[in-house]
Image (cartoon, rainbow, N blue to C red; front, side, top):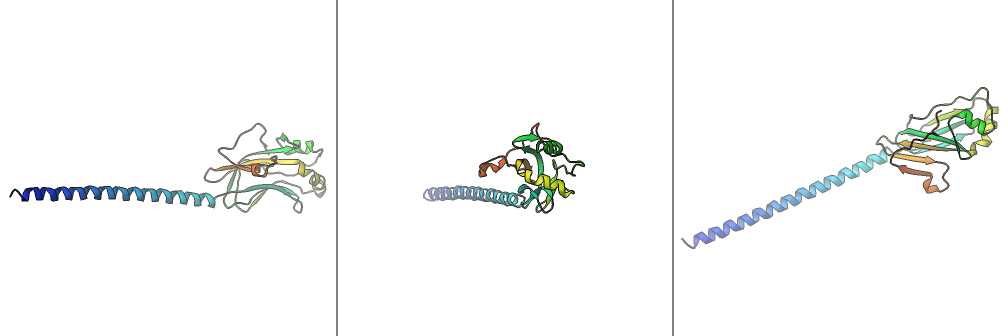
Amino acid sequence: MSDAAPEANLQARRRRDWNGVSAVIAALIGLLALCVSGYTAWLQRQQVRAQVWPYIESGWSQSGRYVLLANKGVGPARIETIQMFVDGKPYKDWSSIFAALGLKFDPMPPYSTVHGIVISPGTLVQQLAFRDEEQFRQFDPLYPRIDVAVCYCSSLGECWQLDERETEPARLRRSVEICPLSPEDFTQ
């Protein structure tokens, strides 16, 4: 009987050792599953970011006779701030821009307020439309003196700033944490 007791004791210890190993293996499998789940969530977030990425461009249409903002991205763009410059100096409205360009229009060409609007992907917004061909003919050669700085955000709250005053192509459009507010913000 004395031989059976140590052997039973040894078997119990071996069983306990396997129970401990099994518990460690189960914990490691759980940790691995958690890591895979986290990585999958990160990948899904990256895919969603790519699916709602806006890309704003500014310009003017000579054939349509208007100044525009266009969303060339795949997601909506919320316009947070916009600034307009003539020869590097900020202006708050179209009448002061026309004055800086040496133009006086009566009646004033119709314009749209773009601050705070959402531009859907693949669409454009006419900021300023010239119904009078003569007015546009006067404005057209002077448009290259105008620069736009626009800050816009995606539906996920990621923001970018397009600043046409930048001479470095890499800085023309850049990601920003928040859209900066400025007393020079364009009001029209």
